[in-house]
Length: 332
Length: 292
Image (cartoon, helix red, strand yellow):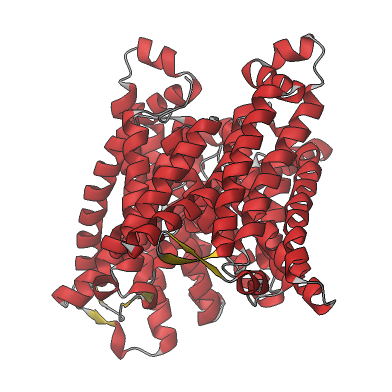
């Protein structure tokens, strides 16, 4: 696993660009290569990848396992739904602004509480706080729609320049796909800068040895709080982008098993690498889509995959791929 | 007045069930430092198992009072599941970081939830025959289902038995020794592997018993396990992870809070519980009775 990290890090900017551009081009070309349905599934995958990127800043880089990231995903989604219901906002840009504002406020507050603890206590505290939001969304049905949830109609994009309601189904999907793709590229770029900045390095120092980090002058708790905040914002953005695509938000995205799902795909991809969570989220999304149609017991399949992953392949898909690449190179 | 008596009993009823679930969770954490996310699902398996057995018993024409004896069988079955799970899936995890342990038990939770659906189907299973056949009693001027009083009694008895087991038997001594210092116990000749299997099976059987005795009162449904797990978390966080006394006091607090909450502020009843857990974690991260 370490080898994969070093391999990625040792790339010069030009070579990095060369390595990334085929994937970027492929992502840009997807709507022309496949049908709207496939494009839609990939859009969901990319949104989950943004959530996983944020989540992994805590798990992979800071060493904190949150079992409550549904709260930040959910607050983004519900903020958008409230803007539709009570303020009659129809613009996607305003959704993003308002949703991010709500996410920042909530994450900053929850963060102050949660980062005082680490390990299992951190996990339980994040879980308990996310369950508070879930039970509120579930019980205050006259505000939140209860289990029926709240509808979010197709918004207008780019400050009203694109009125997506006028488009055909395929056109709507493709337009929205590019919108998501823009935010995906932005998130990946930003997160890359963050984890390679002195701040990101300090987080890894905290993860590896808290005491030593403190001795060299890292303000551990403040850095953890900042990491928590950034992590929540990315996950909140995913929730904001997700809700118009899904058309509906229900308390299901606030319940703790949804947090478990975010944990799942991050581990599936491999949380000790930068690209792991992205890969994991996209693959998981396909796995889930097809497992659901193939068997009613898809949850069993997912659970078995998780157990096997942790027992024999803790480096996830990225670790597997880098080992394969290594074997191929040695064989050649 | 009647309402007050009934609500007091309801609080004790909740507390009994919660003590069995959370006590098992806490016992397992205390001995092997693992938080088992699949614990709630084991409670659900206990409920399904008991309901299924009772259903078979009714079909075979067994008298309702004898059906009562089938409930512990459900609990024992869950204990067996635990005895299989510990050596195969959890033993490789003890040396790994806590995150991995949580992940494995989360995977188990997903698998067991679907195993329940596979074995017993998606429709709720009920064992209401027992509840109905026992009728109701007049206590302090209020009518109360006899079976619910039985549950309270079982909760009380199991708390006492468990206490005697842990503090008055040789196995209890081994258990406490292993929990305090696994290496030292091992070097003094304690078979730690055996103690781990036994403790894990016992903890699972407690959850199973909780499920088995609740099922005559309310049907076994899909998803009951994850709900129960979260409540058990609240209990152990309030009482202190790893402490049996903490689980008992925590269960009483949560039982009373739920009853009061359902009566006076039903909308935020659950939110208040989670907030209490969060506040306790902030003020005393080891819980009210947890050891450092």
